[in-house]
Image (cartoon, rainbow, N blue to C red):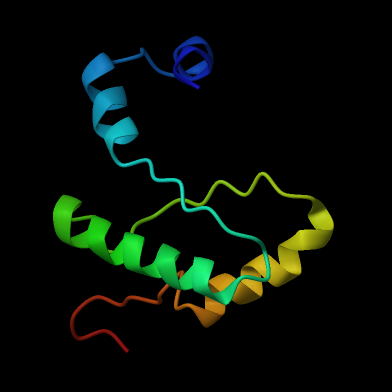
Length: 91
């Protein structure tokens, strides 16, 4: 992944930026219909929010077959991700 990002970056590649990004990568194993896996994912994301101050700003890399998108999106929704966050005082 490192080499691909470096090769295809639209802006000049910066090692320090890559290291910060890559340090936040997590792999949470499970199957598409595994409620517990998505609960573990939610726990992992909450931990990242605390440790890295991400504030709910997460990216999901879904290298899955198109027919699996509905169940995966439903699982993400059911487990609270992506959580809807609003600015203080916003409706």
